[in-house]
Length: 386
Image (cartoon, rainbow, N blue to C red; front, side, top):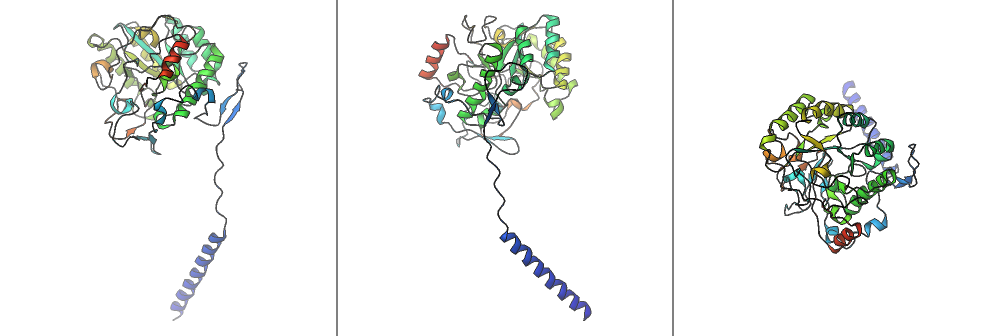
């Protein structure tokens, strides 16, 4: 009997406690919504004598109204962005499964004006993405020692952090291209955000170097209207996966050896490789891989790879009309994309009707011709082949 009374008392106490907790929860004010993220602008803190303020606090900076005016009448502005899920999957916004954005991750889609292969079989396009960083100087020292020029596709927020490194690369004769402001997946953000990603980076480069790049990586259907030429690649080192998983330094070096072994089998022109100057791991791997390529091939900037005259990779210096490179999909054609070996990264893509896993470089270009494009081309006095 005592035991039963104890159970009844405990049950009653539990019920009273539960009701008290529920009442307190109901009476408590709802948690405040997180503060809205606002765009802030400031002069960068690096030693460079900056004249402009640049965006801070957002990876998708707000564009200036005058930039939006460049493409406001283009029908491409009505295309809805794809969806980037929390687990890193790009879902197609087109219900029919059409690859509206020419997303390379899905099916190796490229456009005839995209730079994929080099025009000559003995030329090897060589580029590094995501810098500049201080570690970039190790690459600069190596290239100086072998008298080779390459391309650096730079991220805007890194430009305002390491302007001196960017200037060193440019002063040594290396080619500079745009690689967005904060490395956003361009097919998953709005057209306005895409313009902000590109034009803020362009402005920072212009302030440091005094020139405006024609080359840009990666991509969007609006690039033609903004005067850029999409620069893709035919082989991907997947070097960033050494730390993220899916690649090793030994695997990368073996891939590069296979590229060299496959040189006699190239059918679409010379190779065009992608690497990164992200950190000591990727740069360290590059410093071991590059001697395998050189002097087996002539390492070159992407513009030279595409047949552009040296020094014409900027709006201010564009003179000779570029040779339009063959831009048939580099992937999944093994002889064109990875001579002697399959590319082991997700950039190869899958089926356009399915969702695609985000990779380091996840999208390609789809140019939309319009009167705006023609006007900008005439104003810039160069052929927009990006």
